Every structure is written in C-alpha cells, then in structure tokens.
Image (cartoon, rainbow, N blue to C red; front, side):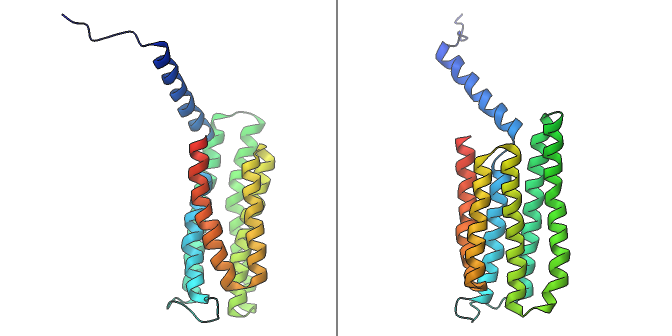
Length: 206
C-alpha cells in the first residue's frame, strides 16, 4: 500500500502561510475595489451620458435629455456612495475603540453628504440656465467626493486615498472652468476609467 500523503516542504508551508496572510489582511482591511471601482463605473456611465447630451460644440451627440443624463449620473453616484460607505463600515467591524468609531462616522458621512447635496442642488438648479444647472450637480458631487476622499486619507493616514481625492478635485476644477461638455468628457475618461484601473491596481498591490 502506497501512502500518497507526504509532509509539505518548508517552501510549500511558507507559500500557504503567505497566501493565508494576504487573504486575511484583505478581509480585515476591505477590498480596495469597493473604495475605487464603484466611482469609476458611476462616473463613466453618468458623465458619458452628460457628454453625449452637451457635446463639445454646443450640439448634442445623442438624443439624451439633460434630465435623463443627470438622472443616470445621480443614480449611479448614489449607488457608488452606498458601496463605498458599506466597504468603509465593513472594514471597521473588525476594529474596536476609537478606530471603529471614526470609521463608522466616516462611512455614514457619505450618506449624509450626498443627501444634503441633493437638497441644495434641487433648490438652486431651477434658478440657473440648463447647462449651468447640470454643471452645478456634476461639480458639487465631485467636490463632495474629493473632500471626503481627502478627509478619509487624513483620518486613516492613507496617502493613496488622499491623493485620489486631490486628483478628483483637480479634474473637477479644470472641467468646471472649461464648461459642461469638457467637464463631462474629462470626468468620464480621467476619473471614470482612471478609478476602475486604479481599483484593480491597488487590489493587486495589496
């Protein structure tokens, strides 16, 4: 009778330990895709719809109304914000004390911030021309995301988180200065596509 069982080599044992360590760390810290990719998908969908409505020369590229485009953007961003808040709260379920409280409050701040933004923009946008109204919604939402990302980076001492917030703020500022069409295009490409790629790269690195 041949015994197929054998004692694992030291190299195999180290590999198994390393794999389990990586898996445990990822579970404790949360999947980076929950923090970056949802925004990438939301911005790619929402701002592509806005870009097709505005165009770069003042003429729409597709029969999409501004209300429809803004609706797609806000629905996608609210869903993305829920994913990010869930990921942050989940990360902090494994911690205790002040770290747990900070993480929970930061996660819930996403919900509160977007709720307040919707109220303010709903109140102010009817007073503006159509393109400026759309830019108010788009610019305000990106400003909120950028601020919360930078605040989260400072809260958790996470430079990647912080600099992603800086990148959102920079693209948002440039787009607002250039106008609605360019704002939509830059956000869809540089933030939408960029955040999806960044989420995958950060996940692989972690």
